[in-house]
Image (cartoon, rainbow, N blue to C red):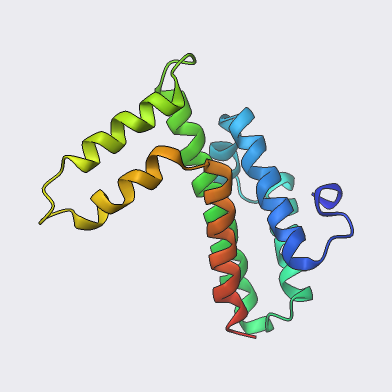
Amino acid sequence: MSEVAGGARPREAIRSVALGVFDAIDVHPWVGAQLFREPWRPAMLEIIESIGGRLQALGVPPAAQFDSASALVHYILGVAGQNAANARVHAPDTDRSAFLASVAAQWEALDPAKYPFVRQMAAQLRDHDDRAQFLAGIDLILAGIGTVR
């Protein structure tokens, strides 16, 4: 974890650590479940320390550090784990673009009175980048954390 974030500024280091974990779980899907199963093990402690130390450097007050670190770590592991699980559900040769286009078409066909938001999101679903969306979530959480300083 320390190598992933190196000498980057705290916010960028958090993004780097998060993306490193995301990519590791993408390549090795079993990692996410293992981390959640035994959160006291060294790998999980490294993730928490990497995130927490950067939150301290951002000036997050001590009273908000536990909740802030928990929110980030749970988001990182949850989204990375879900992304890996989604990949395992489909055959390795599944065309991602075709699959997302199919789901988007299903969303667009939903009842507009009942699902106006889902229908609106269909176009973005079709072309979204999982890593970019993941980092957007990290940025949203960091923006929220920024309000407690």
